[in-house]
Image 1 (cartoon, rainbow, N blue to C red):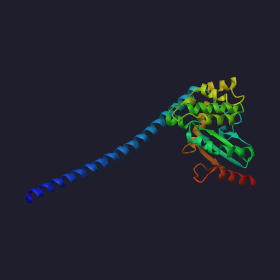
Image 2 (cartoon, rainbow, N blue to C red; image 1 turned 90 degrees about the horizontal axis):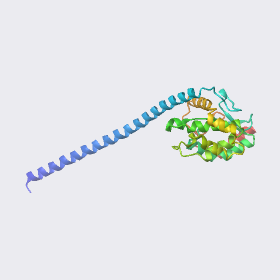
Image 3 (cartoon, rainbow, N blue to C red; image 1 turned 45 degrees about the vertical axis):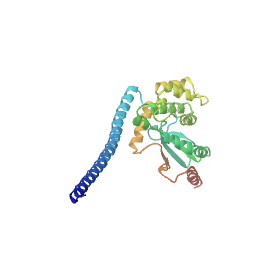
Length: 258
């Protein structure tokens, strides 16, 4: 093979190698742009959903046309907390929750036995604040309708049992099954004495809808990042990666002994 031919083939290979590197670089840039655009679209969509949800909330509140009706026995600022447990207990667990929220169900599943034990011992009071975060993120009304039904159960003195039933039967996060009053009334049948004409009317009429909306506004104003938000005597324990039911029990019992 002549020197000229060898040089020609080498030059061709070099050009091909250069073109391949250019193509690889182009592919990398395209992937980066696609990923970046995807993030922007997700964030943009979240912003749009937030605006739509906020507008929808305003429309529904104005459509309800009624005053903010707190459930029986509600406590705290603007009567937005539903208390469970002994008043005057040394420790208070503040829980911001959404009945459509899978993480809230996870917290319930893990901590319910310990929390129930401490409440029964008079060492802990739980104050529940109801939120409609998933309605805003995924659209729908199930969070609000379920929260209203739970407030109706509080009127009947059946909140703790109905609260647990709602989590035990929680639909998939994307399934807005709790938007249907019939479903919530059906679940009331699992709580002795709850399925009454008064409860049904409260659920169907959305008696506490404006109260639920006000509770959700308080959640947003509090600057919390998500549900559940769980505070023990004001300290966020859900964000504590070392927290366990055993550690929670120890902290509450120490406070009770002190």
